Length: 280
Ligand SMILES: Nc1ncnc2c1ncn2[C@@H]1O[C@H](COP(=O)(O)OP(=O)(O)OP(=O)(O)O)[C@@H](O)[C@H]1O
Ligand SMILES: O=P(O)(O)OC[C@H]1O[C@H](OP(=O)(O)OP(=O)(O)O)[C@H](O)[C@@H]1O
Ligand SMILES: [Mg+2]
Image 1 (cartoon, rainbow, N blue to C red):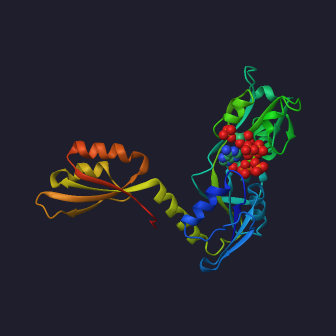
Image 2 (tube, helix red, strand yellow):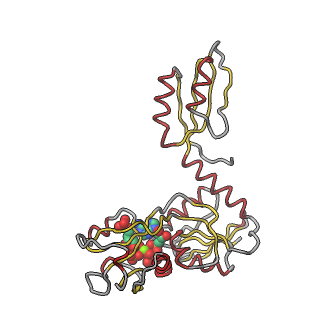
Image 3 (cartoon, rainbow, N blue to C red):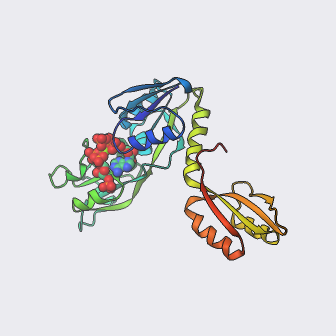
């Protein structure tokens, strides 16, 4: 299987890191453009995220990691297989602070963007005719430099907009994150199942912790409601009369609250451990 990975930019490091955690070899030199992982029967191609949808859409590469916004912008014949829970952004309109621009107000005006496919489709869908000015980057400067009246761009923290004296307006055009894509319409590439299982395993290991605790037998039912796990908690007898040992996966972000709730209920010896890897 041939897998496309962003070679630089916002998604590159996190994508490489995720593949490493999923047990794949990754390049050690950022100048390497192709890397073969013979043990896993895959080849990695390091490409610009914008181009990845094109390669996958044309069927020259089997799957790839890119941004959802870039997939949509490219119009490539590729489908989203799995969202990867990093590279989260919003795609927004923005204009100079205090001008009170609105989306309907863009009719007949100039909108600068590096994503003309995405923005054009959105404006058409909204029934608004505006002139798109295609720029490669640093779009935030377009208004000050007089080539546009508004911009549409990726916003993560909003710091770039703030620095440029701009504010967002209108609803988000889209919510994006890094995704795994495959070619549309063609048969599924061999090995995709395995890749998806491995990446899903990384997502679960990142997002969940394992929680163990001791619980009076009479309270196991109530405690199980606090820690239902994915299917059901594992409950086994403790070598102490009237007590059980309970084990369940818990969303990482809820772990502290769940521990407090269990303690209140009467559970003791509550332990949290990381999950290094898993197949569910
Ligand atoms: N802070 C961020 N800034 C820009 N894009 C981000 C950010 N975080 C995640 N992304 C996502 O990364 C993708 C854009 O990647 P990248 O910035 O590498 O592309 P590019 O702008 O074409 O390349 P470059 O900036 O190197 O010219 C989009 O899918 C975008 O949503
Ligand atoms: O909301 P923020 O956290 O400030 O991030 C968003 C900014 O980052 C991206 O630019 P990038 O660094 O990719 O440069 P580019 O404009 O040249 O693509 C994007 O185009 C915005 O300018
Ligand atoms: Mg960029």
